[in-house]
Each structure stands twice: as C-alpha cells, then as structure tokens.
Image: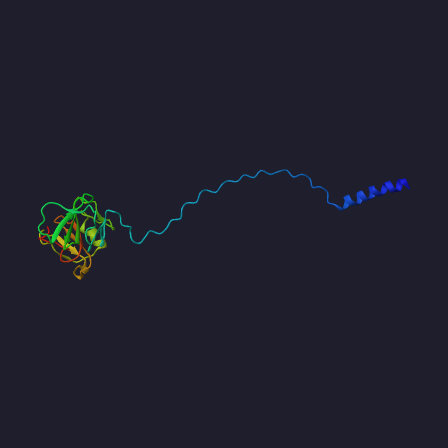
Length: 196
C-alpha cells in the first residue's frame, strides 16, 4: 500500500500539469525602427482682404497719430514751423514723415498731403511717383484739369469729396505720374492758398 500512496501524488501532479497550458516557447524580440514624421508646416491662411496699415500708410482716417477731423494729439511730433499765413489755418509737419504735411483749420486736421520724396503710401502701394494707370487700377476717379499744371496734369478726385467725409485726391503732374496725394475734407482737400 505504501507504493500505491506514493503513486497518488505523482498521478495528481501529472493530472495538474496536463490541464495547465504548457509554457510558451520564448519569442525572439523584433527590432522595430520608427522614423519620426516630418514636422508639419504651419497652415496657410487666406490673405486678409484689407492690408493692415503700417506707420507709413496714409488712410482716409489719417497718418500715424494724426487723424482727419481731430485736433493734433498732445505730445505729437507734428508741429508748425516758420511763419504761418493765418492763425485759423496752419501747415504742420513731422520729422517722422519727410515731404509730408498737414493742414489744420480751426484746431482740427483737415488735410494730410504726401509729395515726391515721401516714403508714405496708400495701403494699395500707391505713392508719389506712381503712374496714372496704376492709380486708375484702384481708383477710377473722374479727372478735372489741374489748376497750375499744363496737360496732362490733372486732379483725380474721389466722387464723395463734396460730401464732407474724408476723401482722396491725386495730383497728376506734367509727366503723367502722381506728384501729390491728399486725404482730407472739402474745401481744403485741394489747393488752399491761405494755408500753402
């Protein structure tokens, strides 16, 4: 009986090992190389419909800190120099904007003008020296004869100029290019003898 009892644990052990799953064979490790994805380029956005004005951009609102229809801001670098024709109407300029001047009438800015040599331009890139054809691509304004320059000299003035709202006027010189650009309100949009 001793032999029978010693066989029982062996039989149980065999029965248990047959019910359990055999140990899996070791699997060789695979080496996987991972190539990092290239950095993604930033998403391109559609260009803005209106260019953002810079400090050298003349707009219907004004130029820099100078605003059409408002007083010259305190601390501004715009100031009158030399003798003025009238206390009611002053011509001011700024060292920040060579070949640019403004007319102040009754304490308010009425016109800002840029001329040959100025680095100031409109948002469309039009500035003094641009051809009449370049101006007409963006501003197909009606032409009127220039008061002081022979043909082809002329004025190209925005149709809304007589409304009292800020408007745009180009002076085309005898060479067919822009000699001056004015932004302002009537009557000082054009040439003003008392202030010039």
